Image (cartoon, rainbow over all chains, first blue to last red):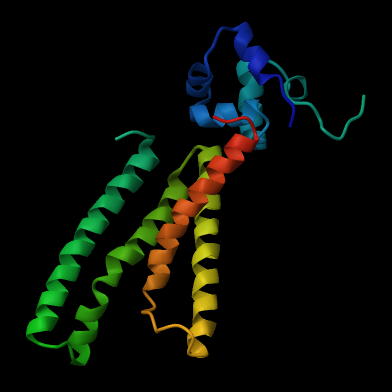
Length: 67
Length: 136
């Protein structure tokens, strides 16, 4: 799933490790989500959204929506 | 020892189980050389070396329950599924070949050895999946 995680992280000058620690997940998880290799569960997606103060839709793009 | 709490507990448990496996196996083999196993106690002694190996399957299951990182959990689950498919496929094929007298008989516990080897194959699958998606 396409997402803006890398951009949002870069805006805050956080490394993948920084973000991983804030989310209480491994750095590999952050990398896998950023590169679209792993789609997070809904609870983790909410944690990510809460951390950036955004909604899930503002971070993750619905792959089925064509607009 | 690197890793989170669940990974450390898993690694520590596997090391302890493998150490006990070696000690138990040596003890039972030495005992069986002196006096062949027979009777109910023989069955108990004979199955003892299997217990630590069975324990490894248990601690892997416990790790999957305790692992809080969902991505790592998916990785290890895939690794175990690949290992299971690998071991069962070879054991099934070997069983038929053995049935037709084309290959020699092997002890059933080799299925466990194949499964452990399959964990390595599963790790390769995970690496390939990571490379396909941009690496880690």
